[in-house]
Length: 340
Image 1 (cartoon, rainbow, N blue to C red):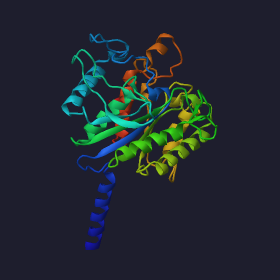
Image 2 (spheres, rainbow, N blue to C red; image 1 turned 30 degrees about the horizontal axis):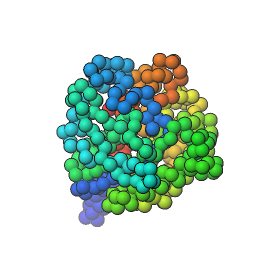
Image 3 (cartoon, rainbow, N blue to C red; image 1 turned 45 degrees about the horizontal axis):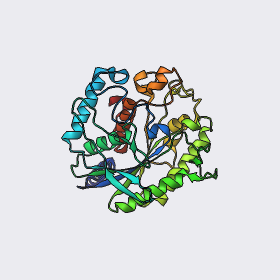
Image 4 (spheres, rainbow, N blue to C red; image 1 turned 90 degrees about the vertical axis):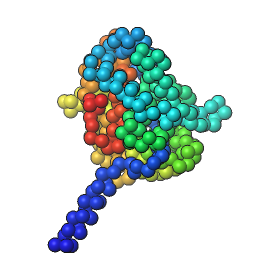
């Protein structure tokens, strides 16, 4: 009986330890790399300092017309202030001399309750576009509940790029001979960022891509992603245990996942292959599934709605939700994107 009791206690302790996502050491620093193509860059159609769904006079337009969503975003903006997120999120920027450094990301509200908190998506060279990255970082820190923790964002996204093509001399495939190998570039940035903050853990790689690879073949796409993640984890300092967080592309972009019709091979790989890969490739993958956004115009790029095009890009509202969902998945919180 005593032996069984000891075994039961040991098993419970083991399960509790396994349930811990990130050890809560005071002042922990986390590096996250954001990579992909135009949706990760932030092609929502909004301009810097304004939103497509709300103007500075608080006139509600297009996206945020649902009262619950308006309240949720206003409450979250206030939570950013209440939790003193300002000054605890940094973004990686490379200057013209090729040297990189981290800078404070601004969450300044402007005229509070009239202008939205000014938060930017992070790309290689400057903060621009909508707010996936900063919303991700704020959500992560709020849920972490450590007032001294910090998040460091490293952006590495390029519009229209993929594994199956070369565009503007850029490709995510290391085998296409492109002048700019985006995987190598991503690892170079991440490595330099890790060296710049030697006491930070490289905690995750966020991936929002697949639109350009819709006809690549699901198995081939998944293989490319697996290799990319493996190389990232093994070649970037302190990235061996980094989580791979992948978001699905626009649910109706050459696909209908709700009815198991995967005309988009990359999206099929996102949903059915990559999360269940065994071994060292894309193990510890967390899937951000955006199926709940299907067919809802407030989650679609405003210009694509106006021109009645097949939706390809998310709206700013959607990208903010996806950012917060990425944060939940980074901590393995069992929340769906529609809950934000």
